Amino acid sequence: MEEWKKNLQKQYEDIPVPEEAKERIKEGIRMAKMEKKHGNGIWWLKRAGGTAVAAAAAFTILVNVSPTVAQAMEKVPVIGTIAQVVTFRTYKDHRDKMEAEIQIPSIGGEGQSAEANQDIEQYANSLIQMYEEEVREHNGQGNYSLTSTYEVVFENQQYVSIRINTTLIMASGTEYVKVFNVDKNTGKVVGLMEVLGNDQALLDRISEEIKTQMRAQMAEDSNKIYFLDSDMPDTDFKGLTGEESYYFNKDGQLVIVFDEYTVAPGYMGSVEFTIPEEITGQLVSK
Image 1 (cartoon, rainbow, N blue to C red):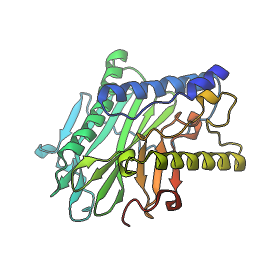
Image 2: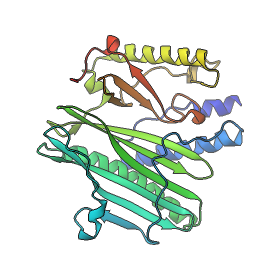
Image 3: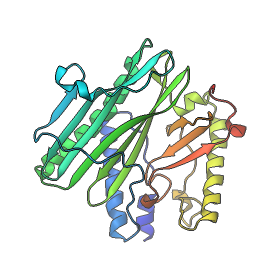
Image 4: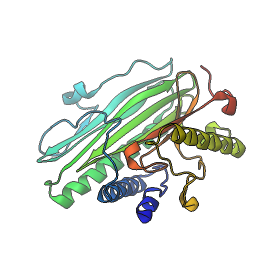
């Protein structure tokens, strides 16, 4: 049991390139199987994002330049006066018991967003690559469903935040979250450390606030478990690295997002912590 918990507590980093994304998600699958083997937990998909939709038997990539896929261009309301988020393309596949539907958003408008769009598409391509490898490995006969959707979770005159929710269902389910926070003026993705002004002391204060919230939640609800204050301190949550996914809520507060298994057992799903402005100060205009 101790070895199993140690495996669950293994940290993994953000996903900047396709190969790393593939390895990160595969590690999540491995840990999910380990958790199930040891009989821990009920599998709940907290943000499933919808069931994959059946499509043609062959792989299909629906691209916005094709007149046959105009219906795939699902526009989101204009964000400020600079950017607009649209579904650039949708990848769909369905064969036997294996299926995938991956929405790939794109930022348009007057701002230069090519760099951010490239990062977003690179992440989506890593999911597609992972699915196709599973199809080849199992000759299209496995039980495998991959769904990836997106939503705009924050916007003001400077930033637009696009949250990508990915759900992988095999015998059980696993959830992944990736948030792209884009500076509308530069078109570049802004990391957590950058939005904090590269202030390590501030990052440390936020880490301590997250630990405080973890302890409070565990004290209030025995069903909540975080990798903190355990009998294996070496594998406990130490603090933020500065590469975590984040976004801002409607009140302009910083929200830190952790994938399954990063700071808690898989049955808790993806977890989030809202950081009060008393700690961060005002990071964005409201």
